[in-house]
Amino acid sequence: MKRQTHITGFYLETLLLIAVFVAIILVLTQVFGLSRAQSGQAKLLTNAVTLAQNTAEAISASDSPEALLVLLDENGSARQGEKGQILASYDADMTPAPGGSLTVEATWEPSDPDDSLVYSTVSVWYEGKAEPVYTLRTAVYLGEVAP
Image (cartoon, rainbow, N blue to C red; front, side, top):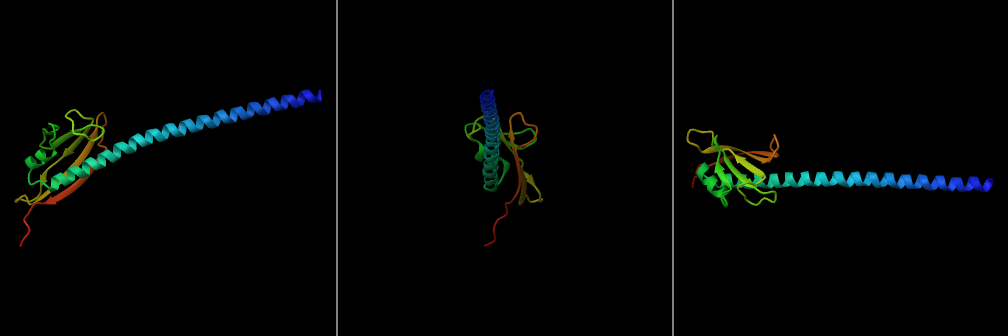
């Protein structure tokens, strides 16, 4: 009888150990799944920041909205929006593409009567999202430097 109790205890400990291993495997699976989702979001945000920075540099190199449109247009990926903003489309890997999943919207807002200071808002949108992934507000002085 004593031997029977010892074997039963061994089986219970083995079942408990298996249950603990299964629980650990389930927790690790959830952790790795969440980290993969976080990685995808981080990649999207990194791409959005890079596109916004590149667009801000294009704005600083432009002297008019038309010049900005020419700088951003590659393979027909940029166009003038209905409200005067410049829209450029990119794939998820930041390649210019007319029907891409990322859209960069840049505004051109002169502040002075002589248009020497221009404010711009650069927003990067991902298809299907109600809010932009990233927004950057910048200003460019277009006046000449005195000699």
